[in-house]
Image (cartoon, rainbow, N blue to C red; front, side):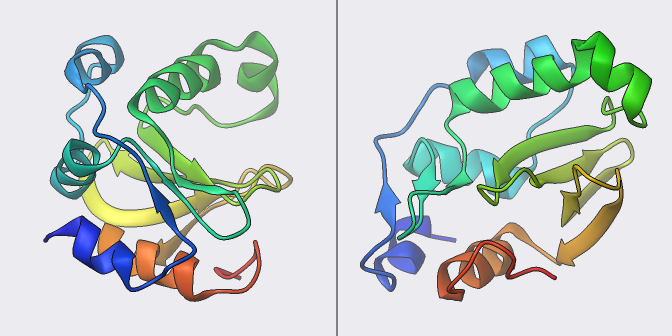
Length: 141
């Protein structure tokens, strides 16, 4: 998959220079999904026409996942997050993630109000296309 070619079909989407991935896997103790790894090697995140981070930067992936896993308030309110690897959001509180235990390549959304985790796309490519083709933050509902 050549990610830049896919994203160029959406002129309002913004790619960034590639980021560094070294620390994500070692700190989180999980492999990056292959598609997410290849995307981040081409661009350190993806922003849509509304300024929403469809795919976060490598630094944000690491930071937000550490926060979700270690925040005591989250631990008291929600099911554990250790099996998920968050990588994007809808701009309204819902987060997109891959399941890493067991490893799966589908994209799920975590609803911050209900703590539900729902399958929204069979692959990162379909997720990116769906997010960029939509005209709002709730395209996955």
